[in-house]
Image (cartoon, rainbow, N blue to C red; front, side, top):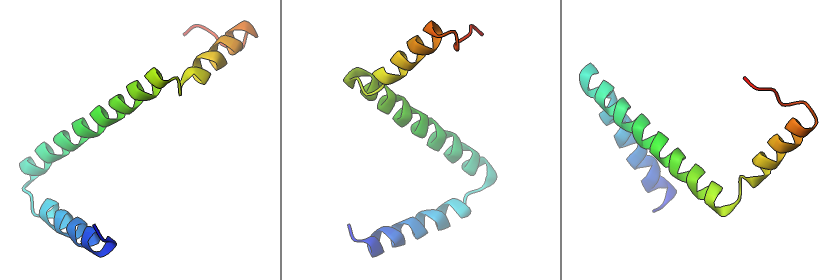
Length: 72
């Protein structure tokens, strides 16, 4: 898809969203946020399973060992 085509499509979406009634907008917003969080959760799960986040566990262990990490 070309950049022009993508920009035109985005403009169409923006116009459509602006024309929603308040209840429709509220429903759209809930749907969009839910989808965004689901995508984020999936990315975190994938990164975790692949080991990309292992450094965070190691940082926490190092901080706890050096006394810099405290229980909440």
